[in-house]
Picture 1 (cartoon, rainbow, N blue to C red):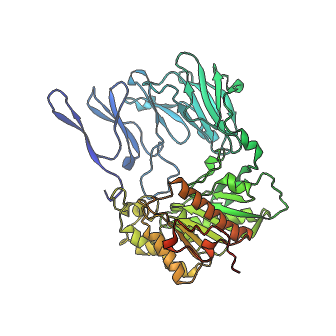
Picture 2 (cartoon, one colour):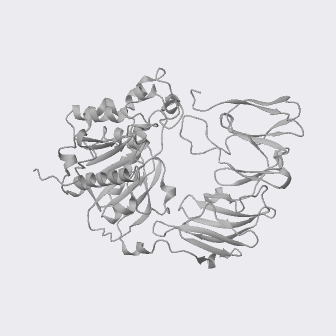
Picture 3 (cartoon, rainbow, N blue to C red):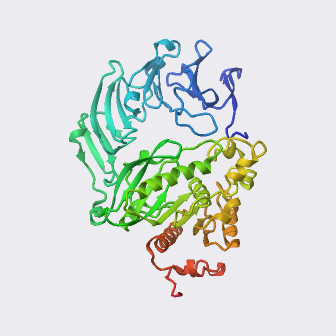
Length: 518
């Protein structure tokens, strides 16, 4: 549909005589059977509600009312999604649903008997059931639960008794725990991983829930100690509208607050919950590798971005600029040596930002939409779907058709303000991109060149939304590193930036060597 979702009618069909019975009309959810076969259940986004159909009583039941079980942070011009569910207990008597923080026990036929079985909301802690047996159909009475603290990003494993509602914390700390630990079939042995920015996610073994005495089973990355890795921290600041935001700040391992460092601002939407993700160095297909750049003397800032429908460009500008200014006030970043980097939706936001401010020394914009008018009328080449839903209902967040509010499409399209760009821009866009039409990258590059502004276009033939072939990923990362080193560290300009590489020499002449021209 134009909304980007499909609707269907739900029928029960007899395998004996082929007769069918209508259960529900025009639903967008994905119905599933309860494990005991007593119910068909699904979440309906337009209603922000969970439903269950009782086969025994041939009755459609509303399990929830209101938005209590829907995404509280939804900033799309669309219906919020659910937080999901843990499952059903023995005999399909109860279904266990998630809200933002807690787990709720729901009686399909008696909602007044429903109850919250965890107390996470008061402490901003999320509770989520951990499934240890992949063949499990019904939920047990004793659960392993993973908790996540939204404030400091710490995690824990908790043993929860759903009958007494008692909790026992098994392990907790400033790390990220395995979402899918494995349990031995006949004994209480659990293999899991835990990780931090510094700690590789090695395998650990806990016996009889004694996670505090867990035994480390692997040492997969011993060579890490030979390298400068870096450190990460959570930072906070306030947007111009008074909203408090948070982000990630990565500093070199030998950080000296009296020095002035170059900084790269890399972002997408919200990333701060990934504070404790371990980031092994490797050539990423679309973004900078934090540990690699920190090891080479860069500071990396990843700000969260929140959005106002109709104004995604301004929303990104306000969040990123205010966050960057907050970091600059700390005194250890050279304000003349700050770059931007992002891909896809991040690439769009960067293209918009550099039309509004000159505070960044350079920017890499990967697979960006720069013209929402021309992109709106296109299709997604991989699926054939119209792109219109993206602007009306989902990530591009305009919340209106082109004809209802053409001004929003113009205001949020960087192409109409390229003349105001004074920032050198590196563009990556591949010719088999099925997500963002690669003519968007061409529009951006040609406009920059027409206006005599410094711009480069990297195109890897036959590659999709990002380079997948290893040699292309290596090449992209080398060029990206050279680009930032030139503008943020004052190192030499490579030939591909100085004079370019003719198309007929592509694949033969890399141009990666430093130019000897003055």
